[in-house]
Length: 274
Image 1 (tube, rainbow, N blue to C red):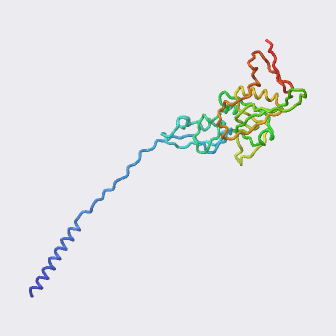
Image 2: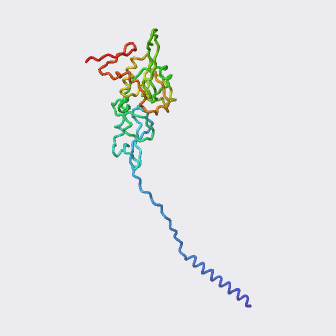
Image 3: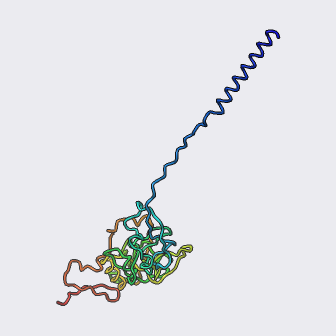
């Protein structure tokens, strides 16, 4: 055997031995362990059950089956919310209550928006210090019937008057006696029709007035041949309420102990009997 073959054979044996050693080490090496981080669990959210509206409730409507309990985060429960933990029987106790204002589906119920059983609706929605006074209207005295609840109007009085002078001709005098007055209701309707907001020509408008304004319009109803409601723009309703009023109709021009008499549309003053 020549020397070259011996060298080749020796190299082959050495390579085989090296390959066997490598294979042995790879087979006996332990598998690598991969650490997997577990996600942190969020702390449990504290919940309570809140009484909410299951259906939209129009103003003036009675509560029947429009309520249900809804889970609510305790941190988000308002102080005026009705909770099951505090009032477990509220679902039954509030049946028959009247909505003071319109409330919407999914809204938490608040007692401040309700009128209890047996209470008058109109007196409950009147602001403190205000009075509700009704006056007769028709299409030609109420902007063609386009005046609706929660609109604002001016009240215009028209009456006959005799001009001074030789002829003594009779004419008409008009005067705006009240300004920027809120309309509470037209007939028995206290809100706009939801289906298309249809116009309804009513016979009576109920107005929100101060005690003095109530006196003014009461006197004007006796004096006037016609009272007309003039619809105001939404922008104009933001004006301050201290607008000019026809307070001369109820004031005795500084005189005490006087009685204002209205006869045939004419006003006169007489001393009151003591």
